[in-house]
Length: 195
Image 1: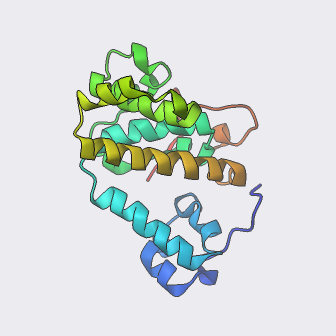
Image 2 (image 1 turned 30 degrees about the vertical axis):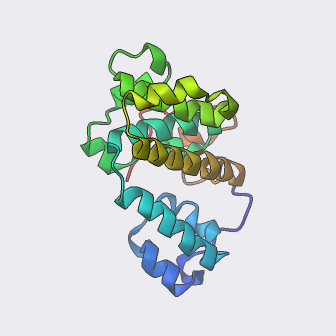
Image 3 (image 1 turned 90 degrees about the horizontal axis):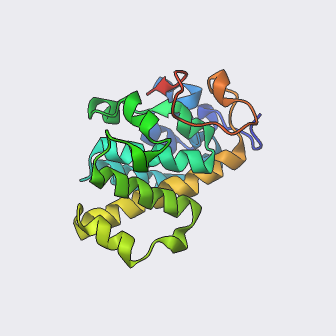
């Protein structure tokens, strides 16, 4: 059971409803918006930022999804792990690739560029001070500086809001495999929701 009150769309600020179109969304798809609706002005700013990350993305959808799911594992954000987005799926993010996230450094189906981006996300989620000059040099082998900044902003979004979502404990609408107390993983799980 969620630890805070989820507001229904009828209780949301009209501009927030217009921005998010909850009438076509499931409870799972509304996700954190049901909590953020308590602070509509802040929520609208956040959705502007999140939208800018997506609309202005230069990095592949597949890459961002792999990083998101690896970060979600360390955050233990159950709703993050239970969701697969259609954009990355259409960009080639298969469940085989998701399964590679269990041991990405050993995965033969991940490119060197994907591996370093995933490692960067993992370190941000687990021990950010280990991100040193060598990590940035390896990132530069595959990405422009603008792309490294873009990657970092996405990872910061995933780490921060994934951890927040995990503390809210909004698991009741998730597939049963994600509802328990034991740690879960996004790989080897056929119980995901595509949105």
